[in-house]
Amino acid sequence: MKTQVAIIGAGPSGLLLGQLLHKAGIDNIIIERQSPDYVLGRIRAGILEQGMVDLLREAGAGERMDREGIIHDGIEIAFEGRSERLDLKELTGGKTVMVYGQTEITRDLMEARAASGQTTLYQVPDVAIHDARSDKPYLTFTHEGQQVRLDCDYIAGCDGFHGVARRSIPEDSIKTFERVYPFGWLGLLSDTPPVSDELIYLNHERGFVLCSMRSATRSRYYLQVNLAEKVEDWSDERFWEELKRRLPEEVAAKLVTGPSLEKSIAPLRSFVVEPMQYGRLFLVGDAAHIVPPTGAKGLNLAASDVNSLYRILVKVYQEGRTDLLERYSEFCLERIWKAERFSWWMTSMLHQFPDMDDFSQRIQSSELDYFVGSVAGQTTIAENYVGLPYPDIR
Image (cartoon, rainbow, N blue to C red; front, side, top):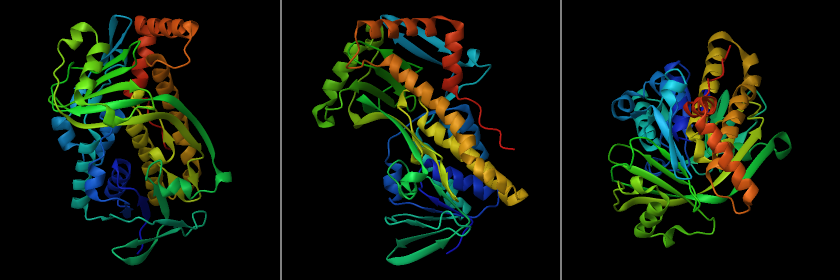
């Protein structure tokens, strides 16, 4: 087999890259370790920056998003008995975010992929990357019992934190930056109307709370929990009771409870590798970086990487601009580190840490008071929340 760009991973970043490349006339093949149903079963993010919304439209996969997605002009931050609304649209000159679940994005991109006629190979568990630093890289793997060699010009590793792409790079060729947080998020998804029309981020003495949503009838709630907690110990009843204890009384009074569709505990970490490429292998999304979900940046950062790699490859194939290939990491990392900083800041300001002393508690309270109480502080949060500009690829 042969293609121009081999994409490892059929999650939203791999599918989005494949669709954009296809529309630009660049042939690509996607290889995915899991089945389509498994990929669609992942419950993930649902807050889209303006840049990702525009990119999905450019890929021709935004029609249902524009029809069913919910545009949000603001968010609410609550702490110490007070609540402040940040008007994102007003503070950023008209920018907003879109509520539209990752599962729905993946489904839309799968349908666009099927309509394009491009090849996607699922249930491929043994992908190996060869000669990534040469001008003739290739992949080997088993598909439907047959040994396959896939020759290509470039390889995009869109296969997540545990994928083969990053693990194929020699340890002495990349540097890892990491911070692991001493708590996790217990998330519950339910077919109940959201408690608020906009997201609520809450700092509470019992732990952080996020009230989010996937639609006007489907809610997503998160509670900060100790990493030693087990999801099976959290019945629906226990979850709803704890959520009500942390919410302000007037919000808790409006809470509609119901059976959970899904419950899980996610650990929080910050993680970045530099550089994000090795020869003709390019790392995209979670393969290169992880952010705590507090800033709603994970999926959006992956889209930013896709945007950079896509625009570089278009210039390579259409204009012969191979000089841009070596700048992929440079283009991506400046924005990534700013998003890492914002996600770290949101996490630090809104969670209870095991080692917090009275001084640290006062600093956290004072910083929250300043940022949500001043136009300058609110603007800083809003600009980062709606998404910083994408790199200008020239």
